[in-house]
Image 1 (tube, rainbow, N blue to C red):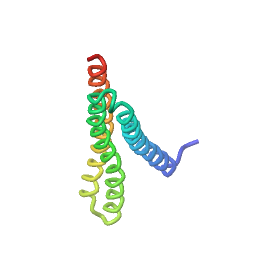
Image 2 (spheres, rainbow, N blue to C red):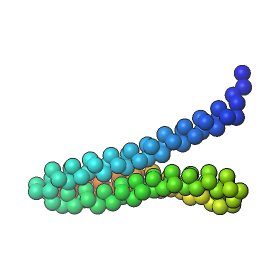
Image 3 (cartoon, rainbow, N blue to C red):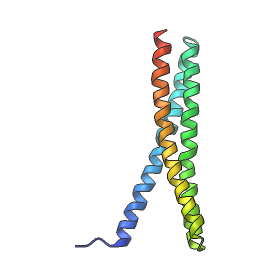
Image 4 (cartoon, rainbow, N blue to C red):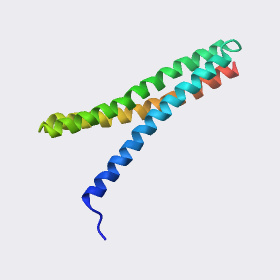
Length: 123
């Protein structure tokens, strides 16, 4: 039994939607967790709280790029509908770049928090 093109397209849309949701969730969850952590340690270890606040910057940037994915995908659809293929293709590439940057900033934030956090705890 062959799978229709419409079913394949819908599956791709669903996967992409879940991926963008995941990018937004992991970055916003990290921000919330670090805000709580910084509040808990600010009096005991201000340097560690400072590291947390710097780490939040990476996750905020990741969150912004995660949200931009939806914006660029919306632009792709509206530009395609109006026959502006070259602009639609550019927005599609921007959407892919935003996904990559969102995930990359999350990973950099994790690495930064891990390395700097261990150094501050050890000192």
